[in-house]
Image 1 (cartoon, one colour):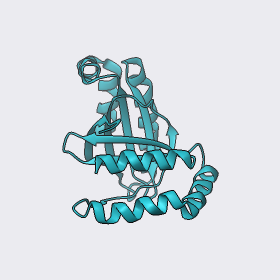
Image 2 (image 1 turned 90 degrees about the horizontal axis):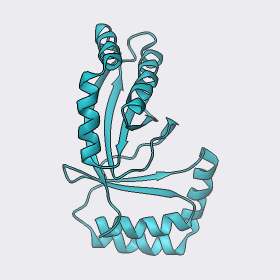
Image 3 (image 1 turned 30 degrees about the vertical axis):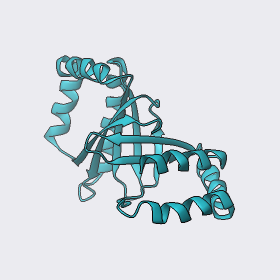
Image 4 (image 1 turned 90 degrees about the vertical axis):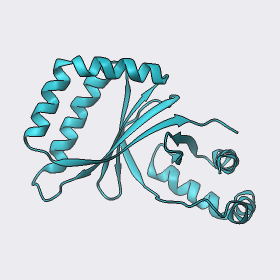
Length: 186
């Protein structure tokens, strides 16, 4: 599957995508295709439909990897873009839309988190999927950088105050944490 992801990336980057491949500590492959805007995505989608190289790859892939399963496809807007670094931790949140203003309240907290996390050495990103869920990511140069950041975060007064305020009136539930290493090739 990892070899197929690398082969796919080579084709899709020729067609105009930027591709990130990561492998979580649970062994799940994360394949992310990004574009500067939705127009670039639309142009890429058209090129994919007419690409002979992509068609040949898919015909080969469909029979070469029968044990792999695609589990989710998310379309996201990214108001804050994290750097592409070797280590990424993604926190996925389901917003409680029964609470009036929940999304705006959560996003305000996420924006405050960006400031705090940047100050402590992380590269934060915010992704909002087509279902209205928020995926908050933190990118690092290494797991050692993540550990240093985590230790500093535990002692940070601004972070403690933000968490205390958010916990007084929760607007979302964290449903998953992905700890991902960037995968560059077989």
